[in-house]
Image (cartoon, rainbow, N blue to C red; front, side, top):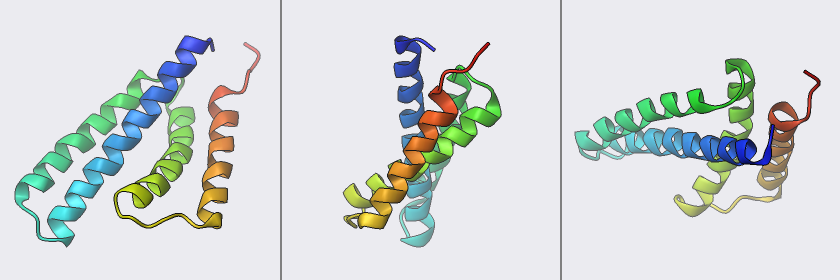
Length: 113
């Protein structure tokens, strides 16, 4: 995988993660915090976009979704910190870093063709 493809791939993982977490958060606000139905509908639309973005990845479904799991872990920790104002502790940080190491190995480790 060349550098441009890798950068695009990372961008797509982050974008998909923001769509999934953001869409889920909007649905959460609608159902758990009594926000307007529009939060739920907007969240549902954002979640549909989340389903589309991973198809732009340059690998097969299983590898993309396994890798996305690690990205989701790290982004969820950051979301909780920045949006919910709950700072990660050292175990959150270590776990997030371990997940990202897994991402690097699964998605970006050079393989023979």
